[in-house]
Length: 215
Image (tube, rainbow, N blue to C red; front, side, top):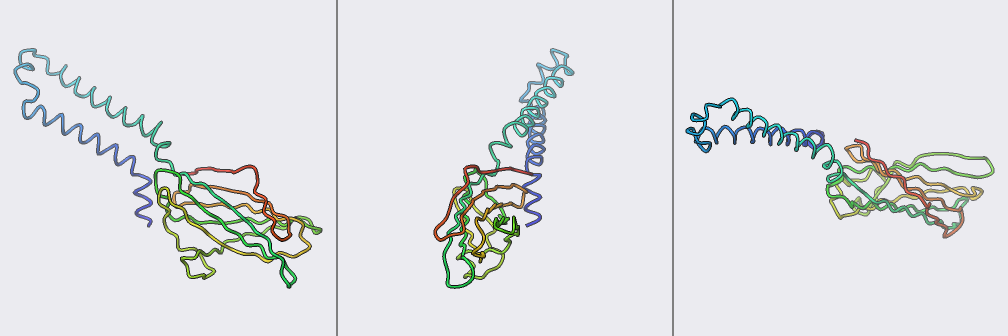
């Protein structure tokens, strides 16, 4: 996976170098096989001017490629995802309320999302003030219900994956604020927040999503 990650990171630079090399070889073959007529060069006695034009053309091609990767590629091939976070609260006959957490990650971009890793920060609000902890253990149906790190290694474009967890929350807690964060192996980060009242059936999504892409 590390080699694949490096290939994704330096793929643009490698592609630029390869395209430039192809341009140079093409120009060399054109001269070698007289696609550029020797007679014209000899008659004009301006070989330096011809070479200058060839080099100038290659520079324009290289500049166009560099401009594409600088201004367009980052937008065209950027990883994009949408997060749906839902929390349902259930009463129990024990000394806690059961919070069932469902997180759906949809890949709405043109490139796959590799090794998505979900994490949730939980903020409890109650008579003791604010308490905080994190949820790092998740499971999905494909994992046979084992409460462990998810085995999802790839979310392809236009596909989605779901992660599930549950928490036992003390009944005296007034409300719980959940902040979900999903990070890919490239460092792209997506966030979604939901606030729920600590009573049965409560689920109140926040009005704002926070999304950031960090390379």
